[in-house]
Image (cartoon, rainbow, N blue to C red; front, side, top):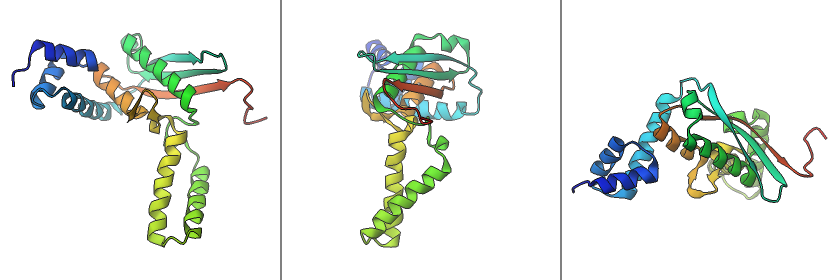
Length: 202
């Protein structure tokens, strides 16, 4: 199938990927735009893995205040260079992630940050629930693993389903931007405030 300039242009506008990447993606997927988007996403994930050991010292602080003025978020997103930190797409990513935090209210950035004590408590709770339901041991373990996955999806930002596209997790959204901008990108920290909310120490 002939890959036309318009097909390449449309894919570029949809994904933000480079012209040659779009052309190759379309060629490898026989001109199927949807498959080409997947091809670029998969390539982006591999790029993200290659970038994982690079230092992300630059960045941008994204912010979002809900229209009713009751919820506000600040989030620090890091990248490798000042050039990318000033990029409009990178800053839009920071804005979208701050909106995600406002809507989904995560507690941690990633599952690595969840204290082991809390992980143990949750596993023990789910295990007891399954045992009380009379489930055999080999089934209990699978049930606990499944519930732990849902637990992480609720409280960890990177594991959460993206509010703007429920086919993606936040980590997928970041990987896509790594593919577009060619740098390591990571969420360093965030703070979410809600009017009337009690602080943990109160």
